[in-house]
Amino acid sequence: MRRLALAAAVALPFLATQADAAPFQFTFTTTITSSGVPGLNSGDQVTLNVIADNGGTSILSQSWNVVDLVSASLSGGTYVATYAPPFWPFGGDPAFTTDASGTLTLANFFGTNIGNNTDNFGTGPNVYLSSNALTDFLDRDAFFNPATFESLSNWSGPVAVEAIPEPATMALLGPMALGWGLAGLGLARRRRGKA
Image (cartoon, rainbow, N blue to C red; front, side, top):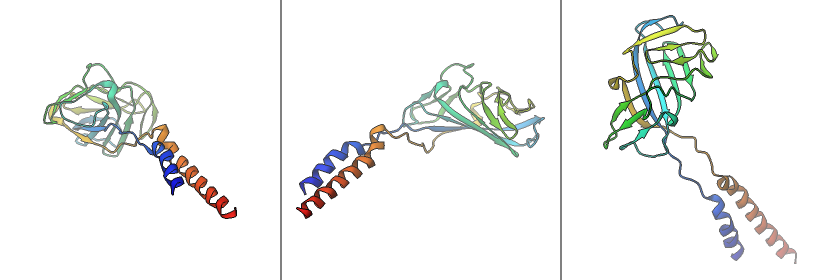
């Protein structure tokens, strides 16, 4: 019994997990006014979801800066695009702000940098968002109304999204340490049985 307690005491620190911050989703909804992008027509509703993580776990009285923006995805009609950081810092910080009740009070999102973004047609520097349009892989544009991402009435959120936790190094060792501890107990019992 002492060996089991000892094995548990040795393995317990390896089983510790870290508390993760909560990413939040901000959603912008608008309507396409004109489009040269196949699968995206005038009158189609477009939804942009921006994921941000400022290291906090609450939406109350929070700010998310441009560097806190983790990813974005846009869909409308049959068109889908995903955007990776860095995001356009043109408007400065913060990108999003909430008040004491968690209500969104500032949307200072200006789009994406030209980078390694992806849409239905490919991955590359042509896939990006500007303040009033999206551009696809083949450099075709679709425009929307309102002509800015700063229109607070078109935004909703923030809403917590499920994070994929990054395990701490010690937590990764936890099952291994527990396994070695139990294996050691088994060997100790086996030796005692043979003696």
